[in-house]
Length: 442
Ligand code: GLU
Image (cartoon, rainbow, N blue to C red):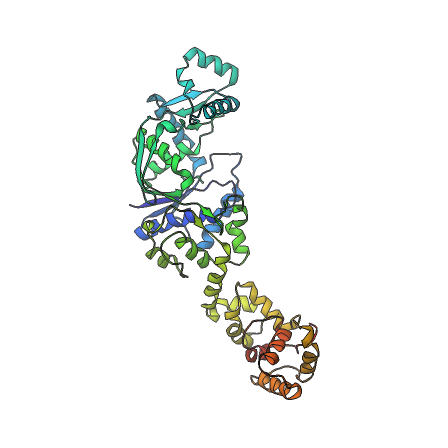
């Protein structure tokens, strides 16, 4: 059975880059009728926070990316210890005592000599007495996995044939000196134990994948299908890493982005398929295929989320927004006309409130200096509300008669003075919604 997982570390809020990983894995499981696991990678007790676990769940629920199972690595430490013992028995695990400074020095020397900075396996040559002496002096060492120095190959679901020479990779540290189990082994144990069949993650994990394939094989597990999606960049191709903090899903939600807009964009961005608004995950899953994605970095512009958000809102029925409209204090009999008038002129839901305040209190008028006298004269010709459906044409006819203005020179200054904006719904529809007489000051 197809089983995928999204495995965030709860050390921060999840952002658009994480969403790509979550969404791809969710869609693969959904399309196959399989299982999607939310795995919380919380082996680091210092950096993992419960507040982030809650926030991750909230973000995923907001998007409808619900999980069939939730697992926490902090509750599975015994299993990782068992796997570590197994590797130790097999002679694939060794203790190393170099300090970070020593390792750094080694790396610098190698680089100076034009060599790749790969750990030199000096610790493999230590006798038991030497290890005991080092342990007495420095405390416990780290535990490294001894890679088989051969090529590690796999067919990547996005990148195609990949092969990495294990000799160019340092033996990965799987357990820290303080005993903390690291992600590299915990993830492998979980993927094997939970029957994960497909792992999609960012291309920053390609080297991890190579080492993890050897660890899985050493532990007798089945290697899942791996796929690595390209990393997101900004609109100009600039690295997004520094800005990802401001692209947290909760921030986008705060800014009024609709979940369907975010999902529709992220499910197609970087693929050969066009981005189109889709209203459900099933629809999104239908056309989804990893084959459509390429290895080139994917440009992401958060501004693209707003036209999609607007399109989603335009498609809503009154019943879908009735509660929000009522919450703004809009009288029930005005709800229908209000929605019909503003639906094509909002980008986010919050714009509803802005329009309502224009209708309820009047706008801050936008008046060009040249139009000031004209607008003042026009307002004198306008009666008090309520305004009938024909009020706009009655008014503008009277203004035309009195001032001689017509066409755009007549209508545009009035639109800007009444609504405080250059664009908006038909003025003939706006006027009947006005609860106060528009004026030169709001
Ligand atoms: N916790 C890891 C991360 O967030 C998971 C990577 C993976 O999907 O294996 O990078």
